[in-house]
Amino acid sequence: MAILDIRQRTGYMFLALLVGHVVLISSQVNTRRGIPLLEAAVFGAFAEVQRGASAALGAVSATWDGYIALRGVRSENAELRRELDQLRIRLQQEQATAAEARTLQTLLEMKQSTPLPTQAAAVIAGGASPDFRTITIDKGTLSGLQADMAVVAPAGVVGRVIMAGGLASKVQLLIDRNAAAGVVVERSRAQGVVVGLGTGRLRMDYVPGSADVQAGDMVVTSGIDGIYPKGFVVGQIESVKRGVGEYSGVIVRPAVDFQGLESVLVVTAPGAPAAEVSVSDGTPPPATAAPARPAAPAAPGTSADAPAQGRDD
Image (cartoon, rainbow, N blue to C red; front, top):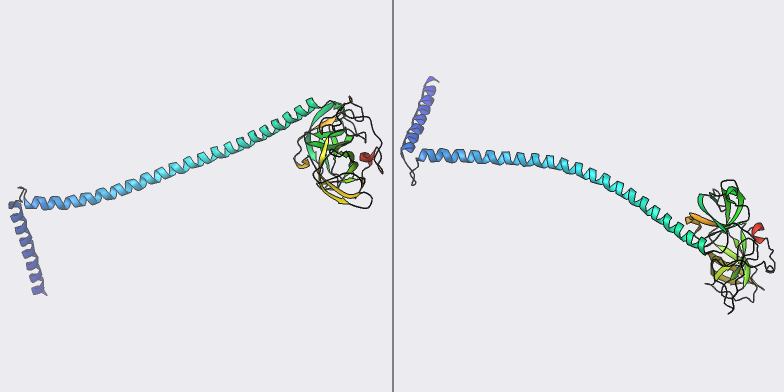
């Protein structure tokens, strides 16, 4: 073992002397550019070490900068999302305000063009029961409202006041099962009575079989019931079914969108005759804002208070 240790030490010494000899020779030998070979070798080795260290530091720095930038972008995105949500809410508010302004403008134009005393009111609630189609408006007896006053909208007839409180009133919609109104077909002047079906449609009853009634005809109030002034639009005939002696099923699609009502006009002089409208050429009066004539005889099978009594399907 001692001999082996001596041999190993001798080998190490020999290797060290050999490396030292090479280093001494390299320090004396120059490259083509006049730089000592040892210096060039040492410089190259340290240059590679520096390159690796620089690349590692650059990668770490880029990663850190990216992380910091990413946190900044996330924070900026969160702020932008909050601003976007606020702008969306503001846009919805502006759209609602614009829609309300358009509705009020249309209502004002109708009020100005209607030769009847009216009171504007806002819809504040709808009926809780689907069997009784009603709405509540924000005007009552303190504003001059009372029962059996007609309620209209720019599109046409809405219904009538059935209960008036001091500051609010309940309105029975024309599509309620117990609602009815005297009407006339605008084109042929065929008379009848529309009754509510409790859904989104009306049925026109008491139409003689000899009357000229077609799908697509406009139906307007006739004024014979003493509640709804003459000439206001009720709706358009959707389908016609002929029975024995008279039409058995004339379905009318209302002109008013009862689901989207926001504001209405209440005619504050129910049954009061308005100024007479003379039509010299025999043309039927327009379907909007025409004043009421004195009550005419009711159609066969009807009575002047048909809307107040209504029908039940």
